[in-house]
Length: 99
Image 1 (cartoon, rainbow, N blue to C red):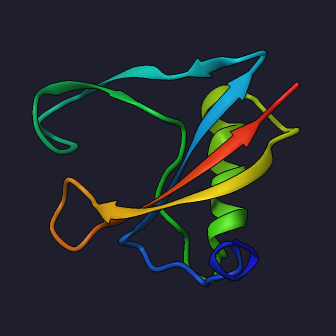
Image 2 (image 1 turned 120 degrees about the vertical axis):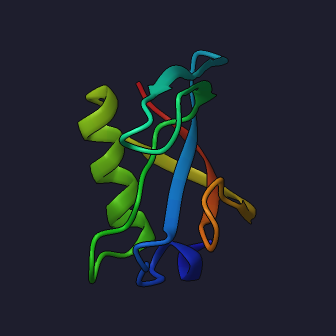
C-alpha cells in the first residue's frame, strides 16, 4: 500500500477514502452544477484531485481535512482503482479510520 500512497499524482488522479469511525461510514451528498461538471447529485466519499507534485497520500489527507475537517486520518487499506466520471480520471480508493 505504501508504494501506491507515495505515487506522485497527476491532475486526473483522484484519491478517495471510505472513512470509518465506530463501525460507521462517512459519506456525503455532493451537488454538482453545470458550470462545474453537470447538474447532478451523487453520494461521495471524501477525496479529490492531486495538485502538481503531490503524492496520493498528501492529496488524500489534504482533501479530507478541507472537506470534512478530519486531521487524524489513518489510512488502513488500499482497495483498488476505478475509472472516474470524467474521461481519463483514475479514482484510487482507500479505507481509513478516524477517532
